[in-house]
Amino acid sequence: PEKGAVLKQLGVRSIPMDRELVKAKQYILLGTEKENLAFYHKNQAVLSKRDVFIKCQSLPSQASTLAKLHLFCPEETAARFFWDTHCPYGLSVQQGHKMRIVILGFDKLGKELLLQALQNNIFDPNQKIEYHVFGEAGSFYAVYKQLDQITDPVTIHSEPWYEKMELLSGADMIVVAQQEAQMELLHDLTMALPEKTVHALLAEPNGAAMLPGVVCFDWVSTAYQPEHILGNRLYAYAKKINLRYAHLYSGVEENQKNLEQQWNALDTFTRYSNISAADYHSVQLKMIAHEGWQDPLEPQCLERLAHLEHIRWCRYHYLNNWTYGVPDNGKNKDAKRRIHIDLRPYEIMPTSEQEKDRENIRLLLQLDREP
Image (tube, rainbow, N blue to C red):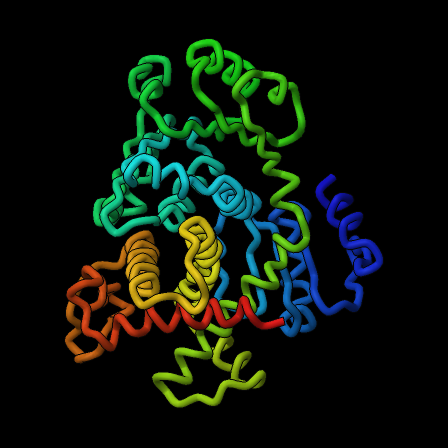
């Protein structure tokens, strides 16, 4: 069904492909993970020269080391666009940037909701957004070993939600990621907490919209929208962020040829750091609009966004198990040891390093102005 929906949305731009390779500029493989990877390896000689998007749920997007091979995780994409659609910045302002968000369900979708929230719900340097997740933690704490470096605390509850009614009653936002017996859960929540709004991530339309206080988000349809899979704007911005850094700090000329060469030369971790920065820009734009800031930004507004961008950059590193450290080689980072000298508060960073964050904001706003 996902394949049919994508083909319908692409219209005349698409050519359906079953088992045999069809000549195209880009490829989206929507079979099972095993089928997708087998097809790619069988046709790698051709596909390695094209942008290929493979549905893959067992590996993160960062697992691909090839610049033109993109691992597409529907849950990750859905989580990113959920927070973009329901960005809680205005609510955070009302609450003095002290909030409590509850997520019910901690399978793949719930985990991605939490990870994307930690990287995108960054609104104030002194914020404290508590995340309370109901589900089994499993290996989560073992995998994300630097979670305690993130100032927004995460608590995973193994007990059922109805044993924590006081916690849910005091929540500023309740999000249901659980898919199994979802309608029953939503009914029980609306009965137990009639005064609360509940956000429900639905795999397909159902009767949830008829329940009072339930806001529905069709996560499957969102995840399989072609523009969300291809991420053309996101990748375009990420590549230009990377090229601007190469220009400023290595003297690389900013042109189309170098744009691709510099991108292809990146390691996977750095590539997705740029993608994360480009993704967070939508939050920056919401903040600018909410606050009524004008472009070009006043220095204090630019400084605030640069500070928040540094926090996002740090969180991206923490979620990949990097820590603060001074490399023996005299450089800023040691990728093997996963240490970086700039994993420290923005206010004590050297001015030259703060300027990188300011330049990131300037560049993204510049890109927004371009046709």
